[in-house]
Length: 137
Ligand SMILES: [Zn+2]
Image 1 (cartoon, protein in one colour):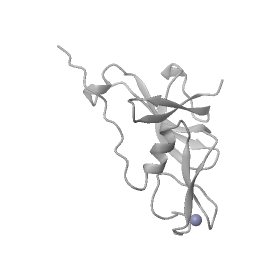
Image 2: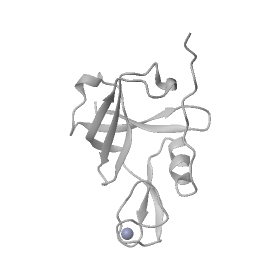
Image 3: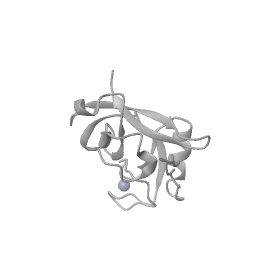
């Protein structure tokens, strides 16, 4: 007998809390440096480009392209048993940073690198929405 387990949910660190709060409001928001004006991901306490500690979260377009991806055919966590095969991708946003995410809304065999994608938010529970991506229509 198969028991359905709940999927693990994100546990925001202090640095990523603004990211997850924005996602809950269906906004994609990333840290942007006040000094060199570049975005980065994942959130951290200082800019990885120039090491400045002056930054603020700013909404981004939610558009990008698939930089790389893999298709999971095997169940590594029983909570994902009903999802295989599924695609885990590195999406490069128009603003530069790359996010590790899922691609859906397309058969996994049709996913390609360089494919234009846009963010959608998966409301996994009342407190948590996870940014995922689908092909641009
Ligand atoms: Zn910087």
